[in-house]
Length: 198
Picture (tube, rainbow, N blue to C red):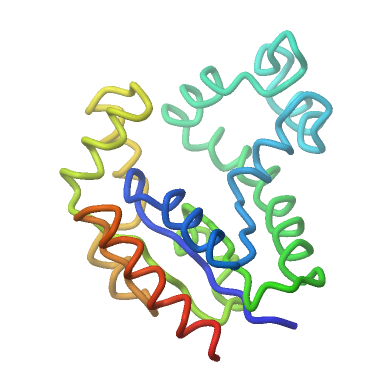
């Protein structure tokens, strides 16, 4: 089996941009956010359990998860958050693992997991973890600009993620996303060369 590495970072750190850069260089990307969206789309595998646990009002008219309503619920209710995670996390992990071990010409696979360290489910089968990092002020500014969420909401999301210093301490590799796209590309290229040579 080809090596699998985790890619993580706080909200607004630039994980998706970094993943796309690795992909253009030939890495295989398995994105757990994409898996989660598939599971919670209309006719997604997670929809029956979500409907049974939370009721019809959390399912939108098109049959998919009503994301804004569920987001509001899990932020205000820790029990609801645990219930949703108990439904989604095992399914996401199972699909991520099967995608990561499928045959591929790529030299390695990057598994993109926003809450990689927090979940405690990925570290044991990955060869290493890459953290995308930037200062918290930059995280907030990027997220507000990208998502339209207000600063208070972004800070509330960040409060539920691992502290930046702890995340950096647990990283095997760090990509610093504070400068230009060219600087980011250079770091990704150098790391890609090293990972491909292993």
